[in-house]
Length: 233
Ligand SMILES: [Zn+2]
Image (cartoon, rainbow, N blue to C red; front, side, top):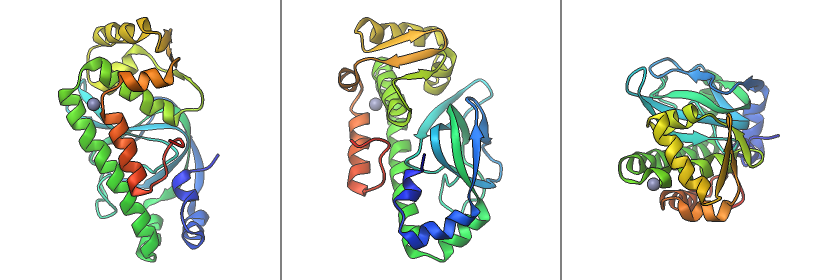
């Protein structure tokens, strides 16, 4: 298991980070950091998926980005901001190589190429957040659900993930009953299969066609930026 963002760095930059990395596991639903709190560690996922959530109130929140082994978590607004602007929550269990935030800042200060690699990642993250905001406001729920499942599928190992209706409702910022109805639409088309606490992607290509344009657009942005992509697409 490796983090693709670290793996794509130049050797001297990797060497700046590696002495500071320690592996940590995270469980599904674990909060890595809370909005408004200082971020003490930068997380480089090795497996699993972390969602950045904008919290409106205790009951209401919505996902604005999902990050897996292609990226890093903990530098939401750039290295100048020591406080988290969103909640980071593990969507699928996994592990990460963790670097103390001050050691990461020091490594950045010493390397132009490392700063450039981070700038590219934050640019792609910004694109994801912007696109997700527009998607949440404008696109049909079945298209959003398809997009979100594809985003997860890209970052997961295998076609089946541990997810409850409540998890999905929480991510999309809608009610559980609504997710159940919309999931049935995708299931009736044999694109996905659902069980108690899991969802399986059956027809990947058809699911891409069922998703809104946001999914393909973001894949294009990542390709143009030359940042590591979660799958070879
Ligand atoms: Zn969309």
